[in-house]
Image (cartoon, rainbow, N blue to C red; front, side, top):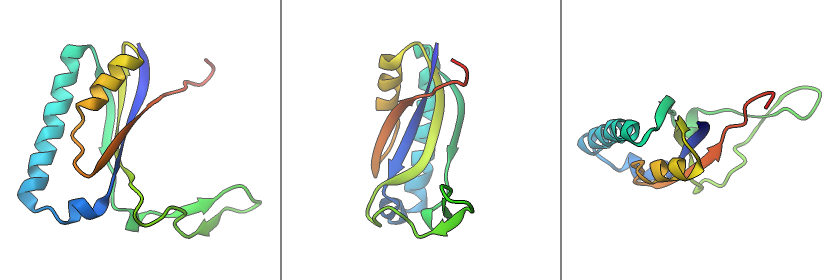
Length: 118
């Protein structure tokens, strides 16, 4: 088994326009997504939804002292909105799982996790 990150990149403006019922439906679809993974031999190790980008802080850490910086990405760029850390038999299974992830205003990215000392 290998570990993969399913990163959810989304446009916050799309969600801002949705009503509370639509958001509740999306949360239910995420619950259904997680339930559908186990029969495929995929385990969700961790998942979180992230707060809005307006609450984030950006730092440069390549100098002698960490420095606060302005948001380095264009305003219209999709942002990391949440993630699933999964354990899957292989990359193909992880990609299949990611294809089932409910994202209405963006896309998902699948990245292998590199474990220390391996």
